[in-house]
Length: 150
Ligand code: SME
Image 1: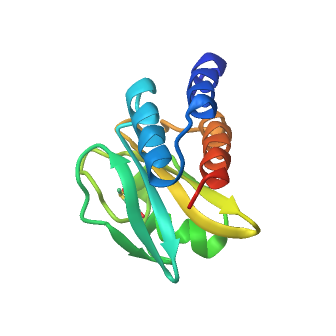
Image 2 (image 1 turned 90 degrees about the horizontal axis):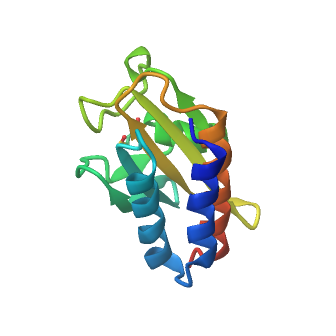
Image 3 (image 1 turned 45 degrees about the vertical axis):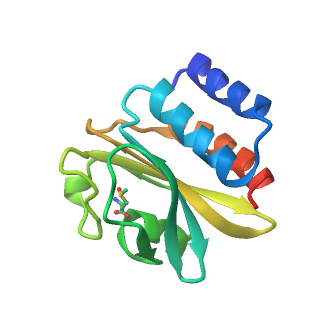
């Protein structure tokens, strides 16, 4: 759950950021990771053909740098063309573990010119960490990233 004040802080920083492409994505994941409580891993994946490729991230390194569409929470988001909010990852069968501490996960698609460009993936250590307030904020972040995607 993010408050209106937190949401505003994140979006104002990104609107003011003059960077583009990967440099902008690097700033975005750092802001989310540092400024929001419970955002324990934050990454951007790019969709390249039938595969998601890890781009910028903050948090522990992950083995899942290349994820086929349809696999895990990330691949499911693309396959179903919809954001994913997972209350407790232990209840999922189609899940790729990044860290044993992860309990909840949110994936928000990044869309541009009618197609999926990639996604923002966030892991949290608490069950039920993410709700619609996180989804709406991450959609706004995704729109900012899509504007200067490169
Ligand atoms: N948990 C994701 C994999 C990515 S890691 O969390 C960084 C999934 O199930 O797709």
